[in-house]
Image (spheres, chains in turn blue, red):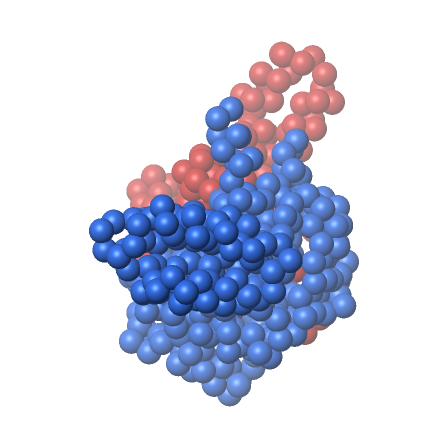
Length: 321
Length: 250
């Protein structure tokens, strides 16, 4: 549905987006990750036709966003950053206006407005002026505007920004459900959101794509992915690390925490180790040694760690300058 | 074509509703009517003149009233969109930038037209007291409306330049003031002294709204004058579209 080819955007001498290419198909939910100022919003603005790219092209449902914008824009529902809305209108008036511009006519329009009001829980404020809304309600009003024409494509710039935890949960669920039938791109800097709602994630840093894969794939790039974490009661740390070091399946081990009650250690597998092999050999070792295992699990890897390892080193370098 | 008219109308409706949702519309209309009344009867000497005409007592003040009132109506058109960020919503809708520009402009123009129409008691008064040439009055109204449209299109342009309404207001007042003064004898005389080129003076004076408005308020409904105002509107709105495209291109 969305095909982005070698997209770049320069603001003066600064390259905000640099040669970005990706595609999103129906049924996919693409999470767009990156530190602040990485070029997420600029990319989304080019996707939705708000700003023209400096080079490259955006195809939406086969229509070029620059050459043939109207049919392309028709397919998209867009929630811009900070969820703007006309403050002098009521929620109903605003949604009705959006539906009208989207070409939803007559009875269908009324139905569409009530459908999104229900989906976004706006009943209580339907006839209230947007100006008087709390941030959460205003956000949901703008979200409602984006889905009012039941678009095939949704572009959401930080859809959960400013929502309370319950609302965040609700919106993630909504995105996941809608993602079954639509192509969705949403940006965020909340990593748990990616795991909760995305089928695929792209990490963008200083205008460039630095990682692209499913959340599971990305997590496996983490250093701790595949490592086994265990806690053993009432045993000396020195003994534990000595025994663990002798395991043929272990590459190295580290004691994370020790006190009188227990020792917590992390064991990293040999590169050729099969899934679960390390954990099995550790539990065998524990049986032999008579260790009392309080906890034992294989780590999936952590997205935040991957995110930091990919994006942090250079940003801190820049900050130092 | 039909859908583009529908889009323009949708945007106009929203804009008009916006005026009336806030006190802006009512404050504007009341002040406009009070000022026109004051200038017509107290300053313009409507009664003392003893002639059944609105030219010198009523219409003559319009360029000066509009100088401050029209930029006040136009200043929010685009700067408000930029301040709220709604411009991003509006321009990612399946409409063209032209439809948005035209829709907003027409809404404000319609609003000014409404305020102007509410001066009808003056027309009734002059008809009650004497036998005026209603053709001249009609021509004066047409001129006044065109003048308001021209000022408004300039306000539209300056409001696209900035997200600050005050700056938008001041810049458009200055431009409108220039358009009034360009043909004013003291200014043309000064230009003659400074430039020594009669051609330049002629060109500057040709930009004056006063000569064109004068003709219309005297009842000379000349297409030249109408074309002058219309082309000023088209030019300013075109510049607006260029400015908006410039923002988006970064």
